[in-house]
Image (tube, rainbow over all chains, first blue to last red; front, top):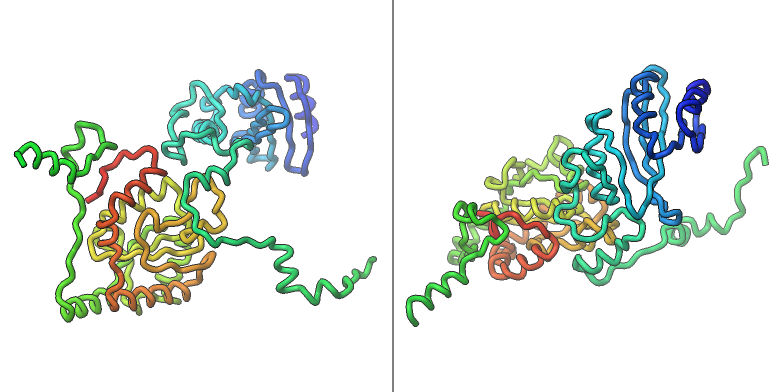
Length: 186
Length: 213
């Protein structure tokens, strides 16, 4: 795997590299070089399976992070290719020519995050939300509680408890007061 | 009153079906649903007794609560003991079990299925989500209370309610039917405009007839 990373470093500008587990690695690449590195990984390195395509909203940095999670069936290694795109004008190249099922992920991302993928088939069709008129709901500045109160009818009398405090009160009252049981090695 | 005036009134009594394209409006009925009068006390009592003993359930799992319907159907809890039987289509069913949360996309299908069911029809709402939203009370996509969209006869609280609780709910429904209290279908007809207003408030792309016969 180290060899592959060195190889990728020679090919593209590698912004970051992280090893999370023996079978899980993440690399961050430039937006323009993404398609090139993905097709290389698919054709030459055996990462033939696109497990998922996911977005993370980094509202503080005004960025969306896209995660292309690839899987190698021969070595059993997961490789996440990360790319940061601008949050104000979210647009990304479509990968439906590399992996045919990519269009479905892109359609979902367009609906839930408002990320556009020009050229991707049926990307502007609604996926889960039919007739949605607000801003994309998975963006972090969308106030879902406020929307729910505004749109749906509330039944009065609803109350909530903090699970931790409630369980301490109801179930572990005596237990919480007693001194903690020490482990052997402490 | 002249003839034109009468025509106008008749037009107002019809449903507009504005969600449908112009060319398709003639394919669907534009009649409003009408209430059903009860027969005399003794005959209606007999009918209610019979109805309560053969509840045919629409097997439409709308949410995660439908998981609890599987053990209820199969041999361990065996709902056939109570005269309850799953049917694959709304046209043959008399009980609609709304299984847990209903998203906006699902409530559209729920309304269509409910309206296609033949009367007398009953609704059991299963789980906390149908009562007040449950754990999805702040979701952008899940309705908070079901009784603003279709009339509900029995609620079963819990997240999820066990099959025993469902059996208790079905027994409660039977008691209500025998007592003649399950008038949800007539209620839907009488407050039709109110229900439609609530439904159209959340279903933004209304591309079906106003009443699905």
